Each structure stands twice: as structure tokens, then as C-alpha cells.
Length: 91
Image 1 (spheres, rainbow, N blue to C red):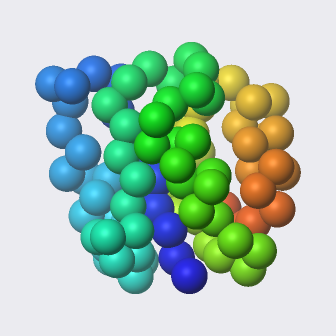
Image 2 (tube, rainbow, N blue to C red):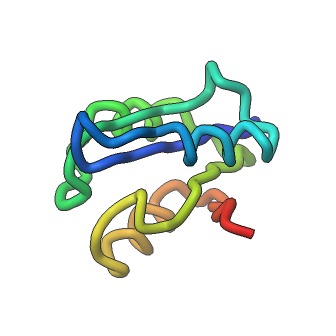
């Protein structure tokens, strides 16, 4: 199954560009997880729900890896934790 994660740092920022890209790559809207909060911590509501929803063999799509978090090591640990393939949609 394809799941998508979208994050913007503030409630005023638009998710439209990220959403459009994930939908283009075949992620169904009902499988999009969206947080409007800082990427500093991985303790984000929708990200935590996404982790519970992911199953072996699923594919996680993000528009850009920095949408997962701010620091490369934390992003790498998050992707390793899930044991899934992560796809950047930026062509």
C-alpha cells in the first residue's frame, strides 16, 4: 500500500503542493497523514499514527525528505525504523 506524509511548519502554510505531488504518485487521499507543526521533534500526532499504520511492504511517500524532519540522522533513523522504502516525489 502507498501511504503519504505531509508536513508544514505552521498552520498558515499550504499543503497543496505536497498533496498534489503525492496524489500524482498514486497515494490515495485517504492514506495521507498531515501535520502542521515543526519538524524539530518526531512526536507529531499524524506521524505517530502513520507509524502505527505502516506495514511491511508498504511504501511511504514524502515530497522531500526534509518534510520528515530537520536533521539527517533523525530522518535516517525514522526511515530505518519503518523498514520501508521512502520515496521523494521531487522529480
